[in-house]
Image (tube, rainbow, N blue to C red; front, side):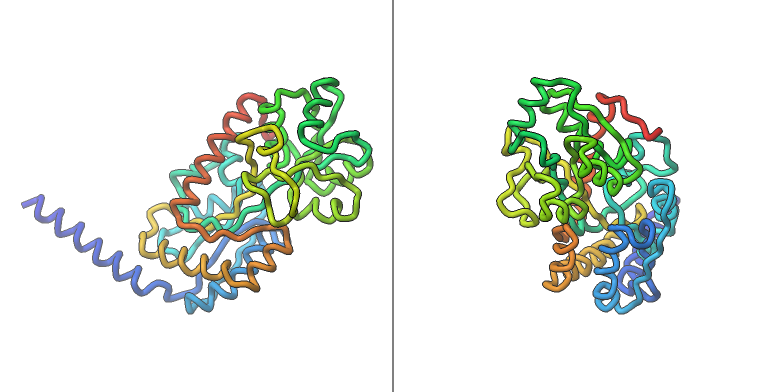
Length: 318
């Protein structure tokens, strides 16, 4: 008897969930991201008009900066899993928990929706440095251990982790000089205070085109259309090297699969539009619009790779 009651209860729950998914959405959808004006906010606002039209409801951008993304992530992790509260974030969502204690689990508390876009870093050097390739940089670093400095946007920042991955794989001794943000780090590098940096594409492209910095390679697994003709780090002497910024759309865990599927399909269609794709590209980002499983795999792979780098280098967010 109890078994029959339990089966009936489960069946009833599935009917309610299915009905909710079929009617979704019936009210505005809120997408939480970092502070207004930042890269993620800019990218999200390129998507929301088209996504709102596709869903037939307003899509509201909710900026919650501060604490390295912890505030935004925690809000979504604790939100009702009905598809009306989403998160648009990048690598910090899963790398910050490797550096410090956070109130959410990046793998358990979120349902991946789509990997919207990626952006590689660019390995750049000061023009005065007598190297023109990754191989020459590695050779110089090995010949003069501890004498080359690299700038980053701060301890645990993507620009720091990309350099530490390079340092580990190349077996070189280069010295980390952290700054409070990639902007100040780039200014210092241009001024000749450091010799190299793994800069985000959107921040480094302008200086590369102006000749203020010399590009050696991109950090994506494949060559990037953002920098035609520039080789990858992996193809320049470090096979397997990859470090990219991932912009993903996430829902709270336990969001009905039908709702996740609807959100994925509509978001992927939006970023595939020519006018949206071009705006992302001009901002140094390449659109993807993946399946949820592909975003989940990318997050797990990057988290595993960065955990090894952070542990080996003894990095903390302090």
